[in-house]
Length: 382
Ligand code: MG
Image (tube, rainbow, N blue to C red; front, side, top):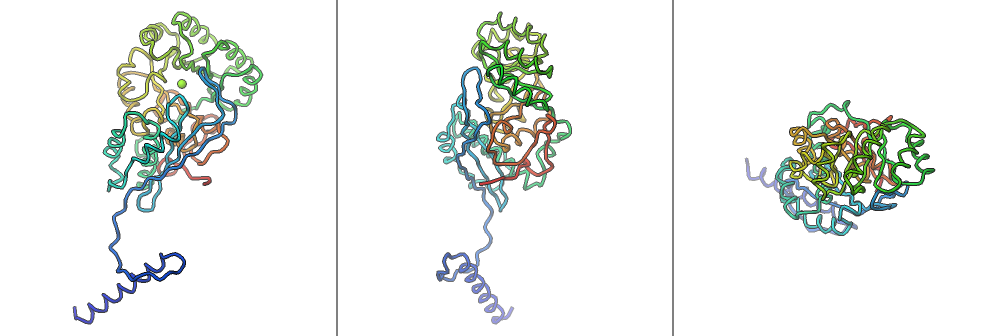
């Protein structure tokens, strides 16, 4: 190459570099000429913001009532592609806006060059603290969404699940007066399974009120509300006669021996929820419960939830997939696992009035996955 040719190329690049620098300078200020840089390697960037979801009705379970749930919405960006995630923090989980944002402030994803290294990134994330499972799920979900978008595939395809095999989701009816329960049952006519919250002194009224409207199968969630195993066993027989098909967490999780006694004699499957949080809890849950209720906010997200399903199946246990009150972001993330479970309770986004995403839908009571990459959500606002 001649000297003139080299000079020409050098000058051209300087001019181009100046133009780029000037175009990025705000308010037309003159920028110092800078040479064109080689394109940088893309980096993972995490963003997050607190949000409060509003519930359509006051939601009452055995231990509490509430009308809102705090969540934190996350985004992980890589090379111009954004994945979405969410942490939902019902009070009994022990997390809050403050605890989740504190945790997320400590997460540095920029040190990872390859977003596909989910095992490494999420293992490191889990090692930051021993708790903060919802905060960890918010990163896990956004990363999974990002990776699916980069691969241009929905997660049910990446995992190899048939999207037509999704289950019906139950629709939850909280503890309330007979009039309200009757009304909610009528409004839930599209659902093929109802989930009823029990654990107070109104249990029989709740079931009888629903049965005055419909014979739709019921799953019951006691939320640790019964205390005596013999009384609980009588109640299980009473419920079975009324087409209740499964019961969640009938006794406090600490009463392990009573739970094992009850599970051995129960006419209905007994599912552990409060008593089973993470993968490492499953081996000791065998014999205590017939099955487990997996929730992304308890188990740190999609990656561990997938492993929990495999382990529970290997141990011959039943699997339920549950949720918190949360937006369609976390619900959509969980729904990609739903073709593999016995029962789904993924109505969390149906219970709220200010959703932020469009994603997995419930059509005629059935979990209906979208043919979109990642977890399959689009942002509605903000
Ligand atoms: Mg439960």
